[in-house]
Length: 213
Image (cartoon, rainbow, N blue to C red; front, side, top):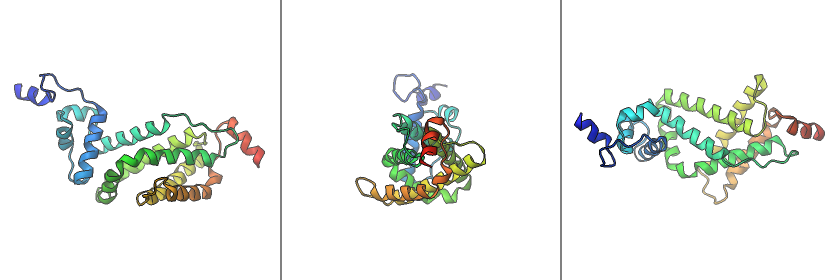
């Protein structure tokens, strides 16, 4: 019992350190960037975070759950500032702005993402889980941009947007320009190709689109 208390007292005061989700996510990011995805375990994350594995497990029962937590962090950062969109702005432009915000938010995680790209093909369950979380994020981005996501058309819009984002992400992974101009060009081109599926969900935007038509 005393040994368990010592391990939980990462701050040296005899009191267990609270399990901070961000602390756990940051530990995973650092470990994956340094050692790759396949060599990282939940126990290793707990050790790097200075927490008992049980505390980590209660918040994130697996590595993929922590990865999902990171994607939610990115979602929150993208949506932290309101989208200042004009009523007559094209749906494509609103989606473009949000997805470029996403690339800006991902800049500190370049090494981590490179490690995932290298290792996830060898872990199909994690790759499937990441793909599902990615579709959830794309749906959230479309909803934030005022795009209809219901019905068959909405499903198609989400999947096509995800494809556009992945194409731009491939460019972004090699884009070292200060303004991410190549990434913006790829994203703009891909979104133009699926524009007819990006239908406004609200009257505020629908009226402008009908007037333009």
